[in-house]
Image 1 (tube, helix red, strand yellow):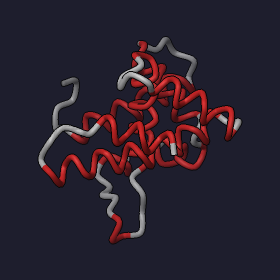
Image 2 (cartoon, rainbow, N blue to C red; image 1 turned 60 degrees about the vertical axis):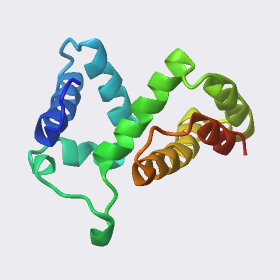
Image 3 (cartoon, one colour; image 1 turned 135 degrees about the horizontal axis):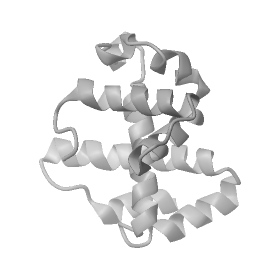
Length: 139
């Protein structure tokens, strides 16, 4: 695993990718992927241009969503689409795209299903149920 459980290193990678994009510096493939997702989220730009984001906790109790989790889920979905894993996710994505018309909106819809699948898997102590995930996407 690239970052393991080092939250600060992962977040620093986001900040660095965003800085390099803004400064027109060369980006590694993962940096480019992260920078593209960040660029689609202007609400996070100021946060990622400072160091405060490195130590900030984002908890539902505080009424805040975690921008790193949000952007990470975009990246996870794009990785799933790139490998059609679980099998059938590309078909589900295309159907949602026809219905919603906006790739970013489709990813947000997919994030709801992915989040539910991950939460249920964590709660049950098992791997995510791919069939249930796809069923949610196809609803």
